[in-house]
Image (cartoon, rainbow, N blue to C red; front, side):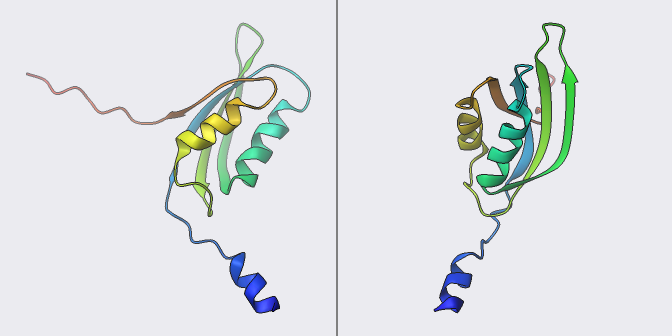
Length: 101
């Protein structure tokens, strides 16, 4: 019985990784809620960089790797946007260069 329970806890990473840009209001606990949500949804955060904006909000750049969560970072962004005092969340990354004629 315990072996079955332990087997259920083993996640197979899907290989999803990327960077998220999250805009937060400067309110106590908002950063912890955002990072906690990332972990609870099956992702590890590898690199976290936070800068304050002119308007007082914070830009949070987070590099994430999948540990068994949803295979779509868009779903994670929607879940983060539902948190109190999170203004926005979006995927960021390399943009393809425009082809030159």
